[in-house]
Amino acid sequence: KRAKQTGDVELYERSSYDIVRTHFGIETRLRRAIENGEMQLAFQPICDLSTGRIISFESLARWAPDDVPVSPVDFIPVAEECGLIVPLGRWAMDAAARTIAEWDAQAGGPCGANVAVNISAIQLQRDNVPAMVRHALETNGVDGNRFTLELTESAIIGDPDGISKTLQALKDLGSRLAMDDFGTGYSNLAYLQRLPIDILKIDRSFITGMLADRDKVAIVRAILSLAQALGMQTTAEGVESNDLAQTLAALGCTYGQGYLYSQPLSSAAAFDYLASRKA
Ligand code: C2E
Ligand code: CA
Ligand code: CA
Ligand code: CA
Image (cartoon, rainbow, N blue to C red; front, side):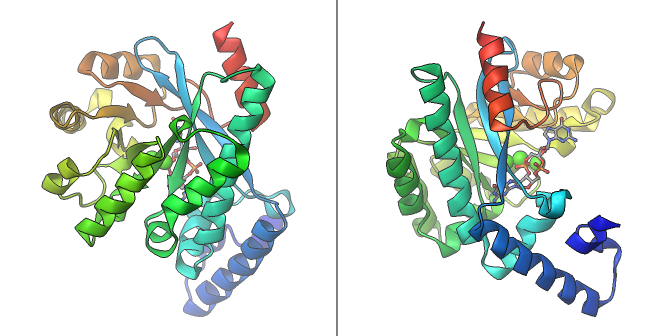
């Protein structure tokens, strides 16, 4: 009953009046949540598929108005539509940088993992993302090489020179760049080759059910050989079983992320998980 008030069940409502009202409801609440510091980040480990070693954590935005969680699948598109993705993205980058600084302080040195931050295509268009990232790094006293910035394919559509410059500016901060949800968008492959992308993240839709689906295996193989040809590393999303992890490792995929390793965790739980795996 309470979820109804937060707007996260509104997908079922069809009329345009309802959609407008819902968006307005989410938008107002989201704006307040960002201003009042009510957003959280969850952290999901990304592991080396052959050794299981934790390489980094992807930071994922969490919002639970009145303790009822709303999925980012629902609120990120709203934030993109109304421009709130700019303050939300700034908050997420700052919170990720602050978390790494806290983990390092707690570990008494570099904590041993990096953090991946999602950057929306709309954010890339509307904000000065390199300046925004630099500001978050400086404010929290952390090095850019502790971060991977995840961009979707839609981020690299448009003015090629402008995008090249922006991505190079992000690389100049020392961060790595990952192409998120690879295979679901419309990447111009020739163009991809000219951009300073370090990692391709293979979308979960190709990984889920892959062991029983030759077509999916063929697609995953093709993405892996493309990545290899372009000198990029690869992360498989949605790794839920040991069999999948072993098969992906045998196919040459570098990293994996998914429920096999862990669900997204609070920052304290992520730190404990990291510490327990190192011990
Ligand atoms: P994504 O970037 O593809 O993130 C991975 C999503 O897959 C996360 O969902 C994660 O919880 C989920 N996931 C991870 N492992 C598994 C698995 O083994 N099985 C299954 N079924 N799911 C798994 P989440 O946290 O709901 O985020 C959804 C999307 O929302 C993200 O997809 C990303 O596109 C967006 N998002 C989340 N946080 C942010 C943010 O801070 N900024 C931006 N721009 N987008 C964000
Ligand atoms: Ca991502
Ligand atoms: Ca992804
Ligand atoms: Ca995905």
